[in-house]
Image (cartoon, rainbow, N blue to C red; front, side, top):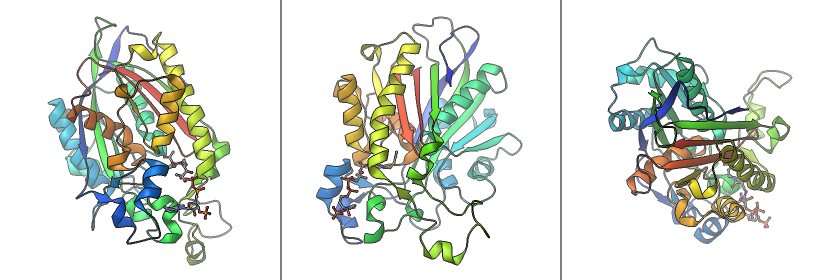
Length: 344
Ligand code: ACO
């Protein structure tokens, strides 16, 4: 599915961005104290050097709230101007209702629609495409799009869970997206396109089976928990093989749809699952390394939050400026994959 470049009429522009990481960074060496792993294994296999994990009763919507405040400030938009909240996350604060409701309450925005997007690592790009559509249809004027992840509370931080525990981090990123009347399609800042894909045939290659309704009896039992049914399960090799195929494919699809080439793009901000995946994509498409902003070494894999964290971190590093042409691509559980192209 795609929403493609058509500069006529109302379009959507990113007005500001904010990011939030909880507490102090946790270096790989600290994980060796919890499980049988090493800095060398983690670094060489994934590129990760450290990650952030929340302490105590900090929830998904807490991190989302901090990132949202910063995004609103950066956009110079007051919270009361927001007319739609979209929150992408893996784990909500509670089973029901969605984490977007708790974020809405924290922002003091009762009454406006709030929606959770559960599309894992592609969740932020799926959410951006919905925000873009609502704005282009005239249903919304200013949308808060947030991706927030507290994954640490779902990780088995023992040797049994080391294959996934070392990969994931907590954090949040948010953007404020507003309506824009485009006058110069080549220069104006606005979102050009989204290309979204999914293939449920790979659902079990990266998943958490329980709690769920695909059971004979109750959707969560002591037996299910004891058998690890609520733990993340990943076939790392299948994920890797599909990611290195789908990410370049969807990126090229996005650029072609807009008549653009790699050379036209100022900055590439990819999902951060594994530095080897991103290096492979860069190599395959011959993208010079200075045009790519990776953050996995600092933040680990923050699933849905990797792309807005990448935007925010690139701004802080002086690598992303108003007017830059940005291309993004994500791949994650589902499998889902997506690319968005925009002028910042
Ligand atoms: N520390 C030390 N040893 C470990 C660890 C660890 N944290 N985890 C696994 N090992 C061991 C395994 O037990 C295995 O030991 P064995 O050979 O004695 O059986 C050995 O290391 C190799 O394990 P593999 O799983 O084969 O390691 P691989 O080289 O495939 O790397 C990885 C694992 C990094 C996950 C890889 O499969 C990969 O890059 N997959 C891509 C998917 C990915 O990065 N997913 C992240 C999240 S998904 C997403 O965001 C899209």
